Image 1 (cartoon, one colour):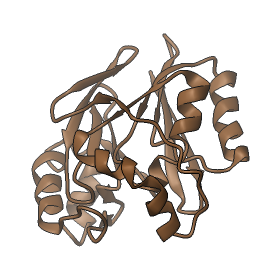
Image 2 (spheres, helix red, strand yellow):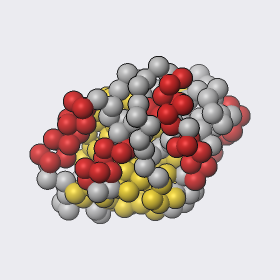
Image 3 (tube, helix red, strand yellow):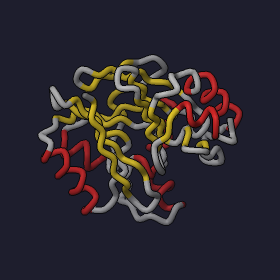
Image 4 (tube, helix red, strand yellow):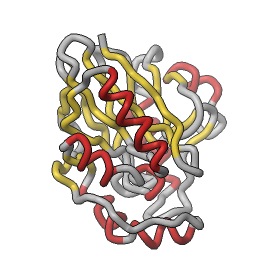
Length: 213
């Protein structure tokens, strides 16, 4: 069984997820948004308590609020960052991003260890995830979809009854809508969508209720 634990971290209320195979205990941290020492410790303690082995940090995108904990997670778990190349420029502007939003940061982050693109397969134990490149919120926004578990980690591409904002660095509204309609709404209606902020939703629900689609 693929198990999922969610945390809400930092002042921007980012959802950080730990997903793991309950047989192999191999896990992944998705969008490490932990910001304070207490949040860092909360993430560390959970992973230790579940006896998980975390070798990867998956980024749905590289806006500052989703990567505040990357340096901590990389050092603590010996994990490399997986992300899309088109968002790499955001790493170079990490400190500036945090300052614009009024947060204090030492500017520490980690480079991309694995470039992920459309159709790439990333594995967590027995579970394979397909990367879907859905730009528009950011140029390199990714959705990690696991058909076997019926789950998709969508970052800020889509939310319950909403979509990601497109007025930030590299955003594009038309591109975002096209990507959602052609790559997400074609997934099974029962697919659970774990979003970057707020509660989870489903593909079927968004088809019927999302006013942007």
